[in-house]
Length: 129
Image (cartoon, rainbow, N blue to C red; front, top):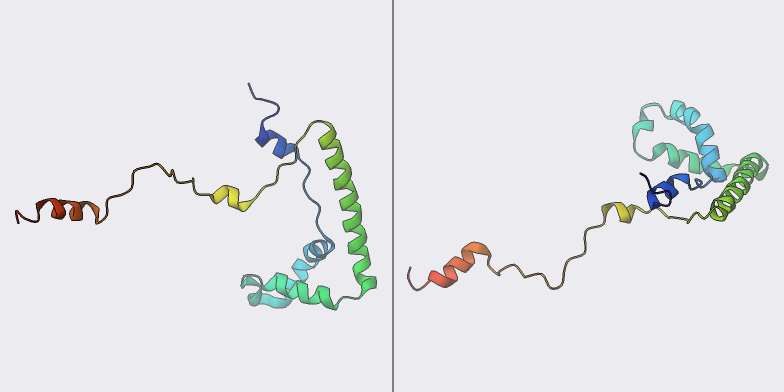
């Protein structure tokens, strides 16, 4: 039996954050930019760097449709998030640090011997050798 309030299930139901105007623009322009760059498009980050440069040079009139779409997506997200919270959902933030986090070291755990195993042997048997 699955628990209905388990954090992983709630995180799955949680609405996904909307894309910003820049990401909407990049998503639409990516095939065109890849075609323009050719082989250079395979270099990591080159497509996004090119899109960012184009976005900066874009006039406000040309940015307006993307910003309008982003505002509409944000409004939809806010409404979905509010209904999610009303149903008793708890907002869980996903972080990369949570995935790769090393377990905390126990302060009371025994320390490793200085010098390693061979060093310990030598310290005990130095006079005999």
